Structure formats: C-alpha cells, structure tokens
Length: 96
DNA sequence: TATCTGACGATAG
DNA sequence: CCTATCGCCAGAT
Image (cartoon, rainbow, N blue to C red):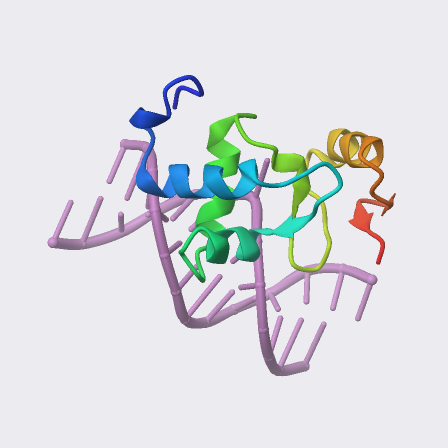
C-alpha cells in the first residue's frame, strides 16, 4: 500500500483513511467508532488489521481500544504522541 | 472457494 | 482487575 497513491488502496482502506483524516490533535476514537464512521459497523477488527499493515500512513496513535487500552507493543510511542497532543495517558491506558 | 489471521468488542467467570 | 471465549469483518494465501 503506497501512501502517495491512495487509488491503489481498497475501498475499505480509503474509507478508514477518510475518517482518520478528519481527526484533530487531541481527538480519540475507538476501532469500532472508526469502522462505523467509515460505513462498516462491526468491522472494528478489520480496522485494526488495516492500521497494522498500513505502517504509519494513518494517525494510528489517536485510535484506542474500546476499554481505553493503547496499541499492544506501541504503548511508549503512542503515549508520547498523545501526551504531545494534550491527552492524559496513564500506564498504557486513557484516563477518563 | 476454503482457511487462516489479527493494533477488536462484548461477555462470563 | 485478570484471562478465556466467541462472534465479527476484511485481507491474505
């Protein structure tokens, strides 16, 4: 998947991208919300797959699990990015 | 067409 | 609070 040529992406990837593109610094969404906003309610797991394979083409750090958990294996980086946007993160989780 | 996979989500214990 | 399951979806093989 080439970040400079979205036309080569799948419809699902484009839809997910359009949703994430609207997020502003400090915004937080869950995989399920992204899926629903993209027009694919229930496809939360598929959203995670897209983000995992997309390797940073999206603002993945603003996406958290439904229970507020950060991305497994990327807690440090995600915590750093979120705090830089004013989000309160505590022990790999969103406080609030 | 059949199966397997996973950065999910809800539920039960 | 934790783990174990199960249902779900789109992609990859």
